[in-house]
Length: 378
Image 1 (cartoon, rainbow, N blue to C red):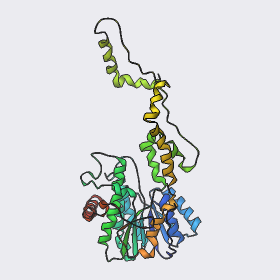
Image 2: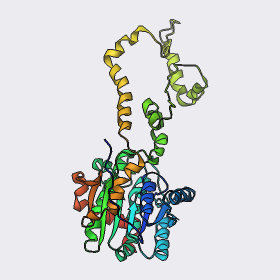
Image 3: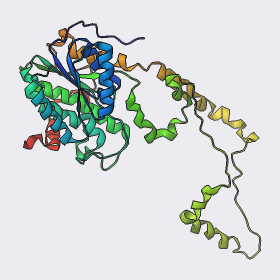
Image 4: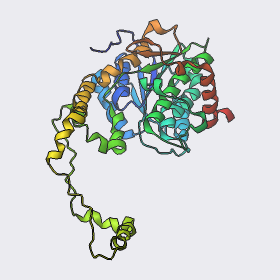
């Protein structure tokens, strides 16, 4: 079943839009669509070379020469401030701000001392949006679109350990940042009521984008067990995880320094009876014998289950162009001009989890985000 598409034909002539993370994936497709509608589009990206390549491709595809790039590294709050200052000095209006850039990665810390996913996915965009509010208000009616994820429904804002310093797991940290996107959208809408600036949180769908490039470094060895997932791009290249058996190789040279004393400990204990008879425990290797005849009835179905499951999952994964549709819908659809602070998926309003509609948590998160980004003292 194909996802719904944005059907609006509205022109964006004389409008200005900023799209973060626009050099690839959903952001690239959103920027290209807005440019095709005639908007002046600013690609806010960390990698300047990739941003320039994306700009050239968008100009070629749309014929719109009014596409610019500007460096923005959300992992650096100083970079966010520099980008916002530059934009306010160079642009007279801002009609659409699409906070799209996102990250799913292993534990790391930004130069500002915050969890990388929390800052890139939430804090950086929180600061950026607040710094650009005057320009957005001046250009009203204007819009802020925050790209979240269905993962928000599995998240929880851990105010006691917001940076996951006590314990860390990648998916809960990601889900927390995506829940923060929805709560930020909700509270921002409340604060902007009557200004003509509307806000939208978007779940783009399960999209095949570059965000998955971080996975190999985090779970690569586990993904080798999922043979079928490797072929999602139709390359025909498959991978295999192999247990070669218990083999005498150089890998064992590390053992003496690690556990040597434990291995030598057994030796004097063997001869405690003074018989001269010694005993040995042996692992013969991973050997094909009749002992395995019991496995099919016990676990066989589990070993075969993963392959069709992941093939099925990837069959439903959508392209970045399809995933961009709800973002575009929220950015341009005229019928949404009276809506604000809601959560959208498949080009329609959806009800997120109860945690994503808790106004008290949204306010608390706003105040903490203000403090963490330095807004409360500026």
